[in-house]
Image 1 (cartoon, rainbow, N blue to C red):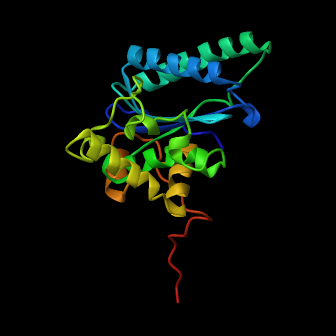
Image 2 (image 1 turned 90 degrees about the horizontal axis):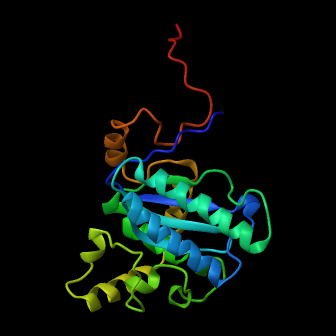
Image 3 (image 1 turned 90 degrees about the vertical axis):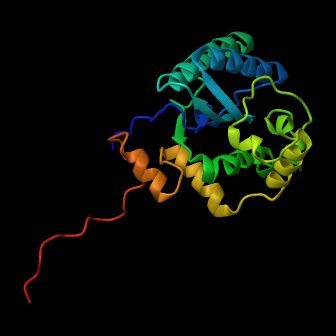
Length: 233
C-alpha cells in the first residue's frame, strides 16, 4: 500500500519523530548532540518554525513544533537532516544513509494534547531506563520548563504560559504535570499518531482538520467493508 503524504499546516503544533536507520545510534557523544541542536536552532529560525519541546535519544529524535507556513517544517527537517548526515559521516569516518527514511509527523490538537505530548517527550529517557527522573536527562527541553536552565532553542507555546502567573508557578506546575506521568492509552495514541500520520485530537478537531485536506487523518476500519445490498426475506 502506498504511503500517505505527510501533512504540514501552518499554525498547528506537529509531533515529529526522526529515527536512525535500522535503529542505529545517531549521536555518539556530547559533541554530536550539541551540533544537532545548533543546526536545529539555526534552521528553525531560518524557516520560521517554533520549537516547543524536544528530546534527543541515542537513536531517534522527538520534536514538538509549530511551523509558520506549510513549507516551513519540511524545509527545516530537510536542511537539518542533510547537514547533520554530512557532519556525522565526516566526523565518524562512515558513509551512507543515517536516517530511517523520511521523518514521521502528525498534527496535534493544542488544548487536548499539547502539554501531554510535551510530558511524553520528557518521559522518554525514563521509559528507556536511561535516568530515574526527567530532570536527570540533559538532552531534552524539560530543564527549560522547570527552571534548571534557559534553552535558546525553545519557543514556549501559549498554553505553557497559562500554567501559572509567575515563572516559579509555571515551572512548578509543569514539573508536577510531568511527574504525574501518562496512562498507557495516552502513550500509545501519541506514538501511533506520529508514526502513522493520524491526527491527534478529538473527533471535532479531526473533522475540522479533514476539511483542509483530502488526505485521510484517522485509521481506517479493519476488515472488509459492510455490504450495502439488502437481503430479501
